[in-house]
Image (tube, rainbow, N blue to C red):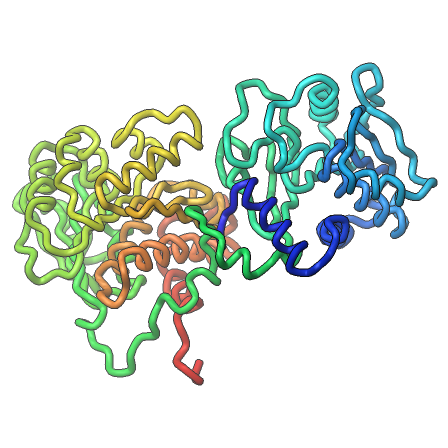
Length: 507
């Protein structure tokens, strides 16, 4: 699923109107009806109580007027507040005329701001994706008044004041919504941490925008869902053997952090790797052999940390990082790996911290290396970001410069590809915010990179999606607060099975 800019969204609307031979008010009616259906399915007239629709002078306000009319027709107690304006859009005026006389309408502005009870449900239809400058004057006053009321707010398209594609100036007023209901495709602003306080939970409703336009329009940002990954994971052949799915080498662990090696190893095995060898410091040998009997284990000559690189000829992919620490001997192992590896690499955790502390090593990264940093680890590789939009610029530039794939972990983990494309993942939940889940992702990435049937991009996309999906499958049994990294690996196979391409005419 593509993530369009505000300008492309307007083009999609225009293309739909032209393709269907309809007026713009018809598309507005369709979108606002979808919103109203969404709201009424979740909120009865009795539960809604007093329902306030705040409308701006443009087409977002027109959406609000349609919603107010339809809610009134379904028995909701609705009133409308209008921003004072000298000019309104044609579609706004059309729907202002269609609003039933029984619906109270008042102009809101400085000096005309009635109190809003916390129990009031407010539909924010002030401004949408067409906003090009920070709110000021009456609009800013209304938004500040609304936020101070702490009422239940649902925003149409975007929270008013929020830019779709760029950060707002500091202290620019933005509606703080509990839910944001957008149309057809999500906007970039909905996916970024810095906007979470405004967006709340977002929902994208299909409204039948032109399929041809959406298929043809160029985009460099995508939403990763099951539809995007369809047919990317081949079914396992009937006559497969261990070698079919690759032999992976995992370099992990140090004294006190052998658990990271165990978690990554279990994940790699549940991710479908054919064979797994794990090299750990000598102190971790017995732990690894006991905790993960399916894996072969190499004991490093050093007791406390990794100090040597084994012969690599037998392996189809190598992963390094979970729990390895930052000893200078371990840094030397990483450098040797970068210089000698002829197979795909997956780097995480302290391997990334070693790269950040020794920046010249970045120039040694083999093409198509997969890195999986969290924001702080990524900052050590690049520079502090001014905001989330700047961080995405740094991410795209880094992946292009070093010809690598980078998963920036978060609520919507973003995979950057060397060609400049960004992919935002849709699976996962806050239960993943606990120690060790990154090690699980590393092991899963390693398993899929060892599978020679998969491209680097497909392996990375499948790993990130299945990792989050495993958390979604586990959470009903553990609760999000009770979800631990160790609970994830058993659900990885189920998550991957959901994505497996069925045999032709089979299943």
